[in-house]
Image 1 (cartoon, rainbow, N blue to C red):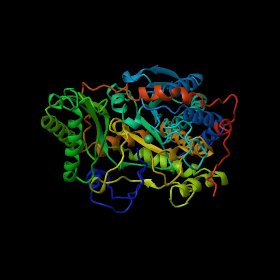
Image 2: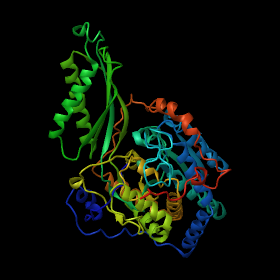
Image 3: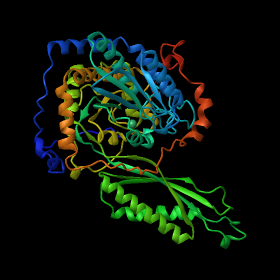
Length: 543
Ligand SMILES: [Zn+2]
């Protein structure tokens, strides 16, 4: 998911909300919903929860650093979920395994009764993003190996720290409520959340609190910026032959892939401006003197609406069939590898969360934290602004008419199933490219640890609001049913025959795992991962 900067405000009057969001453009910020104020007791419980989170700083540091060191790609997050499940079991959660046929997916539960709060965050890494933490220039631990070049090593610790803090208070206060912790498996492939929805993971959930790393702290409601998407692989079948001796006997499946790419790139000019589409060739043949009998190309088709995504998918299928026809090959099969609905976040929960963001505020950065941030910004030719020191504003959505498209996150599917928000917490550095080694450098340093602690405090306070103020849950569902869903109905992009692409990334992890293992963090011997790696914090390029 890209880190969205919410720059547009729009006038939103309760009943006209959906129409206004359909693109009347910017206007004054809407008046807040009339959510109940905190009682003195709730205020005291929130202060206590923040104190409980502070006591968990060592647990947060160990979790963030351990998961960073595992550096696992989507669907192969084996060590990562072993670590998380062990930690949750130790803290009284019961675990349901193998959710929706995904081996690394689980749901951990604690508590009983209503409300049911689902706490989620992504866990997978980025290919070729291996990077030493705390070092302000490219310095991989494992050449071309995977790494946390987005920061998905941190979000689960936001939720776990918040849940453990709240659990203690719930037990003492005898509060009714169920906490569910679940992982965003293979988010970088937008590979699982639609399947979790289909498997009924959110069936009895009242509120979903999602969290994602950012370089600031913020939350938003309404239509998210960026795009939804369908991820499809096209498999062509030709006929092999000696490429010099009998080329006329062969039919090249690679030719079909190349012509599909050419066709799509011409067609792109005539697609709506908010689209994004990109592809990689995953099978381009074996060697030049064998006419490739098989070839495959993998496409992401992104648009701002469900209908837009479906139109692109249909066009992609047509271009693929045309390429097969031109080359005398066959479009043997297509496979859906992932999907994501465009996002829409809940107003009542966003406003509740935002009030807690203002209470918690940003972490206090050290001179070393700021020096690392300025060092990487200088390295990449960006403005040397250091780290964010002020919490973001409450985002009020990006109207469809002005949404120019961008990244995707399959939390979109959850956001159309139950009232959902995504909390961004400040564990990364502004001005970085995303999906890149540079985004990994802060992710096992005090910047990440402090950002997670701040995020966990916000999450804990918002859980207390949800547990103790039924009006908040009622307002959330009122918005979900009567504003968000008034003009739009959720139809899954995945078809009944589609299944999670759990085989993805296995060959890559098989290739790098032994190398990565040498760098696994051992908290029993080192007080931080930086210490284990013997890295001076920060390490800046010598002038
Ligand atoms: Zn992400």
